[in-house]
Length: 415
Image (cartoon, rainbow, N blue to C red):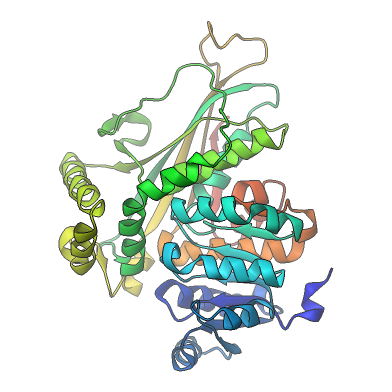
């Protein structure tokens, strides 16, 4: 059905007055390709929404809606074809939006990187969303489109009859002289994410057990940094949501009996110098320990700059810092040609790809989430339905081509 005829807006950006939400609104406003879309901005405060329009020079219609007021959520969702939810931490504010979207028959995307919230939404709402023909997709920002679509892109470079051993991703962040910074909300999500490990275990107890087949040598499983020559840096396991998201995509391939092979996946981030590696390990240890206690979380949240060497702050990055920053995520995969026995042979196919783009949190994230929403808007009838990961939803869509047109590079280095 053509929803737009019945609904006032193609997109509603919820949380548009937040640090990232504002940039999502700004990206839509500044993008000539999106001019024909009907877009509204929504949030709790009329004056803050007016301020968004004032700041970016737009005149988006405004909707006042609050997650604590169910009627306002429903009224907002009833006016949209797709809601872009930019209000975190999702652990506290996400579910009412998902629930209202399903009730209103509205598609949903967000920029959450919180596995406990994301997996709990799938467990609770997948069947309802599927029954209502809806596409509900979390983690449509830098968490975790590069990892999830990048893994799918990497797997697609193998011959269809090959057996793929594993895929590993290595994230490198680059910054200029102005340095790097991340906004407080991202930090808040991370603190509560670490604190919700027990809840995540409970959610996972209810998920069907699905084993991802593995062939050939396994990648190193160590929490300690190791030198990884191909990226010329120390590699540490990446504590974000990438591994959780990509593994769910792989399991979905198995449960849906897809012809695409599911692969074991591991995520790493890279640090070029020994000094910073030890600093990161120390910081991570302190952070992880404190985040598992209520008092520790309060302490971390009260002094973000102190615990992160100034990396996280209420001010977030400056325009200059963002302009000088970029990311590259490199993927290394190996596999076996059809005739080979992985039990005895060495892998004879190696694939290396990358996904790269501008500053990840506030320049690339709007590109990711808006293009994901647009793909749903234009191709909803062709996409699978339910509460899905990005790769499950968009594997057979034109999202990668769309992202390439918007300044995100998907590159094959070796295949």
